[in-house]
Image (tube, rainbow, N blue to C red):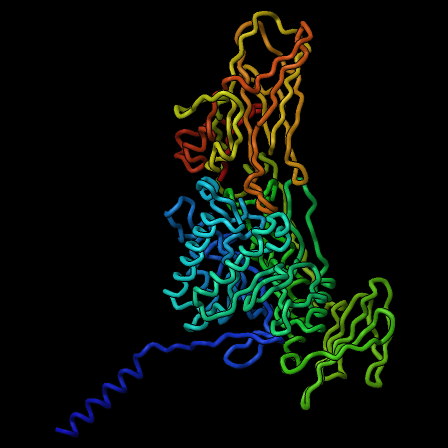
Length: 625
């Protein structure tokens, strides 16, 4: 009997060992040199891939290409307005499936830095804040304000709890090794006065109280309180110094390129310069840089910030908007990463000794009993140089760093590219050419949008309404409609003067387009004077105001506003007088009729498919497959 009991207990113990869930839990801390994972300092290389700027089908391929390029960590923001578009109603599906994305990173064997914020900036609509937040009584964003702090804590805790439930923190065996609270607050902190520091201290305390088991960071926050790690953003962060000797030197955003605005130039950053910046960061004591972006992707739908941030968020990244490796950027950075990893043991063991090799020339040496690593830098951006180091001669091209993992042999110079170049080409097709492509003719179809008020939910108010408060961002469009009755012939020189906070507008007189105006990324305001023709008797003025991405950055950006706030004045009447319509009773319509029809996905029966497309007909929806 005792033998049977012993055999049963042994069998039970074996079953528990075999079928018990395995937990590869990691203890993540930091010291003055690096992130420390399970007691070992790590040199880590990170890159930004924002999950909603690509599709779930793309995620595994993008993450694998990042890993193949030498990355250890994927960084992403969490976008509050994507996940809670209506207060209390959550969306974590499709491109918003955050858990699926984090698990895809884990499957690839990479770590993740989760920048919860929840303010993101990121050139994302309204900085990532849901617009309903703006309507909470007494609220003021990003300051020591109780209604705001309550909502910020609630959402932050929800994301943390979601990650915990899926065991996604490193302390639970998951990939998340860092989290971020707030974002780039230091650049706007002064505008918030004495309430700013209490807010930052509260945000730090709130975040650490959530007990994630991993460190928290704040980027561009010189006064980040302990134990929060303050980090650098910029094109170069080699000169950055943390606010405590106990904190490591991290680079949260190293820019591959820059943001594309509608009508603006496409930004390119030569990979030689980016590689130089990264090598200099490691040369002077850095241990965790992050490429912003490693894959930029696309601002789908109405997610672009603004005003006038483009649909493309390519950012001249190592993986382009479409998920294609960009050469030589991807390949050269991969070579840089390989060279840095050869130096890891020395980098994590000691601090650098910096010596001058001449004007704009320097050496940084990491030396231990077993290792010697050197970085030789020429920080003159025009002249090559030859330097002597440890009895050997080395050529340093202008604005370059040479990496010597053994203090003797150069394995890489940042200015010398060994990767093959590849230039993507795009072909532009006319409408006629598109229809004649091989295979079934796709065929264009169209629907006209009514001019002026066409929906039953229109309403009237005296005066001109600010657009964002009126639409609550349900649409980019707001109609302002006015009927006027002129007793006499107004004359032929009448001009309609319109002032708007932006971002664009179209003016229709008696159903006909009279003129348009638009702002730009530097100044979104629109002031136009449009010659118009009115008649004696009844006339209709219909003004269509458009937003092109809501403001995403700056102090008090949620109060900047948009739309036609006036004045709207009729000038040049025959008798020399003017008419100010600003305080008249206007009729308003939020959105377009086509939006209510869910164009372009509406059934084909409502589309006109005649062979001749309408010309010079404003407000027309077009569709082609």
